[in-house]
Length: 145
Image (tube, rainbow, N blue to C red):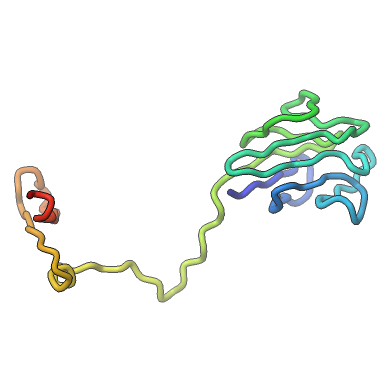
């Protein structure tokens, strides 16, 4: 799962890559450093699981908000607005980016001959009433037994 915090004001999106991310201003301690005077040195923790993010405020002075409501802890869903003090983000979660398709990558083609060579027997049905466009249906004879 890919999780990003997209700034509502300015700045670049932040990708949450670790299972647990500490957010704050303190260099060397925080995984995600946000240099803004309203954010505490150690502000909050974000836990990433399959499909969800969880937030826990770590006693910050100016608070952590989800959709405008101050929270001590809670689940974050895609599209939620997450605020660390006065710094606001929109939460994006989605599938990981698929791997790049290379120029020589091709779809594997399975021919009737290759299936017959492997001992599979199929019947080919053409122009059947259930197949007015002439698509080929392959039916494994073993399933009919």
